[in-house]
Length: 229
Image (cartoon, rainbow, N blue to C red; front, side, top):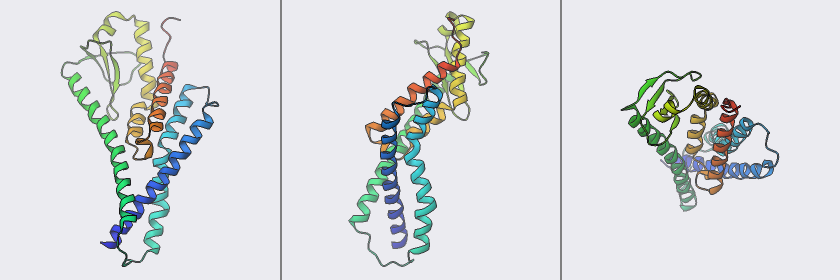
């Protein structure tokens, strides 16, 4: 148990340390590149997504590819060490940070699932051009248009959108959602929220996610038809 406990603590602390370094790197790069972001909204969204997931991806790769193999190869199986506060406290903090990130992802997934389940109770299948996923008309007090789901994405459109929009305006709406679908924005949004790193508990992480969301919307707009041109 001592070896397993030591292994767990070392892996957690290494993940936290590398994640902190990655979070600092992401923040620094965001500040440095903010004036020289690509002109394309899609490229900006890709860059922001990459910066947001960088701490988690880098930490996982380095821990799994370097720290864990080195520990298993060099550490004796009976180290005879006592797990003191200097190891346990940082490991517990890491567990807390990881838990916050995973809980954010789980909440987002469950909220979407509840929303879709509620809409599907009264949803009516419809056929919309330009969108390669099942589409449904729903009753909603607001003019909602929502592409929901990752494995089985579905498009939900409020009745007033169907009834009041012209064919050209409706085509622009479906092209916008098709842009989100092609970019896999639902998956990217969930991955960012589920990243178990320091950015999950720091304001800069939320700022990155919000900046990505704005750029993703602009990129979807760029992919849509202009109904007024």
